[in-house]
Image: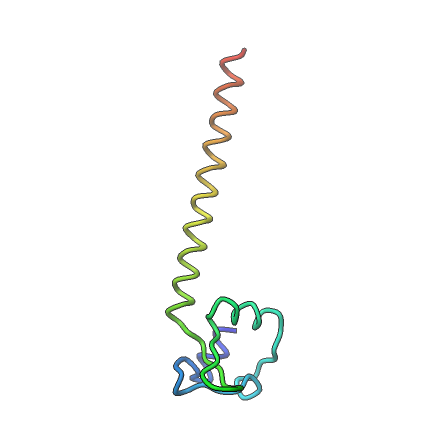
Length: 87
């Protein structure tokens, strides 16, 4: 999806294009990216890919995944520690 916008050059409001011109349809993935403001509507029917928002959302998701991983490791460590102490 990102590559389609980059290939079309629709990465700024002044270069916004219709989804048909970019070569994509209004799929669930497109709608999800619109809700996250990664794909933005510059004017009625003309869209562009906001790279800055994309990178920010991606960084946030990576941080959240890292936090979840740390929590899982800590829980496993705690469970293991408690189990060993009981034996």
